[in-house]
Structure formats: structure tokens, C-alpha cells
Length: 242
Image (cartoon, rainbow, N blue to C red):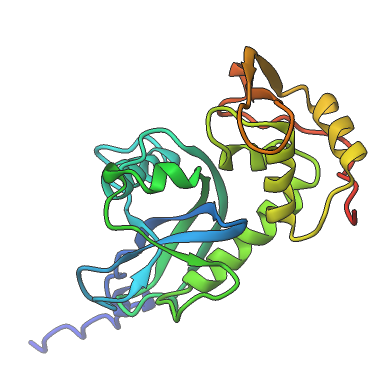
């Protein structure tokens, strides 16, 4: 009796098992040093690109992280010693060519931190580089940084975002200088003061004034509690150009 003719393999049978998708988070950690916007990088301790400077990042841990945001916050705690910075989702970067290990997806986040926090011993081995003079970076980290810088500069026109680059207390001239450093151009003083009133994000520190120096004492301000991790937004942009 002749053996039964085997059934031809279906297209589905011919397909090899799909390789798992690499799923990570990357964080663009921005600060100001000498009125220049800088990004924090870490030296990679493993392949691929071992020894290269790169964005802080890591795998999403399904058993530990309730969301990609939680994964990004965990990475900042573990790798940068930052327990609670301002952190917002930036964009998703994906494709077969961004990581030599295979098809990958990264949910990118942007964090803004005062320079003093990055100089603390708990900040770990972070390396600061000006966003205008970046070294060669692995993966698509240059594109992620460029996207973050463009987002921050646009959003600074109509929100409280630059205040997260300040310390706990500051004067209005100091805050205006931060806005100007982020935007890369001067801001009209009258327009700036009007915008701060409109955003309603600040409160004076009662009885606290700057002392010393050549200028008159100035009132110290701080961020109101409702806006410590939430932006204040305005419908109109900030007047720039001096």
C-alpha cells in the first residue's frame, strides 16, 4: 500500500518563530550649566557599543514596572540617583535598524533637573555634554536628543517647563535667564513678567530676599505645590527678541 502523500506545508508552517522585540526606555536628562543646555550621558558597560557615551536607559521589567513611565523613573533612580525629577514622555522610536541586536522599540522620556542635583554624589557617573556639541552617539540617541531639545524649546514658549531647571528658590531675573538659555534668545522683560502672572505657578517665599552683591535685594520665589510635577500652560507664546 503506497504511503500517503504528505500535505504541503502551509505558509504559516514555513515561517520561523519571530524573534522577540527588544523593548526599552531611554531618558534625555537635560540641565543648564553656565547658561548652556546640556544632556547627561552614561558610559555603556556592555555590548553593543561598550564604552561609548549614551543616554541613560534600560529594559522594561514586566514584573516590576506598571508602565513605561515607571520603568523610566526606575532607570533614573538606579543609574542617576534621581528619585523624583520632572519626567514626561517624549516619543517612541522603533525599527529593525536602530539596535544591532534586533528589532527594537524604545519609549523615550525627557527629564529636566537643576545642575546642582546632577553634581551631587548620588547622581552617579553621569557625563554632561552641551546639546550643541554632542559626541558621536550609538543607536539613534542623537535623534532622540534632537527631538527632546526641540520639544523643550517649543514648550517653553507657553508653559512653566524651564522652571524645573531652577533650584528650590530663585529670583525672577534668574528665572528669566533660564528661559532665555533654553530658548536661545532674549525675552522681553515686561512680556516675561506678564507671562509669569498668567501661568500662576509661582509664590513668593515670605520674608526671603537675596542679600549681598551689587544689586538691590530681590524677592525670592518658588514653585507652587500643584505644579511641582505638573506643567502650567498658557494659550499664548512668550514674547522673545529682547
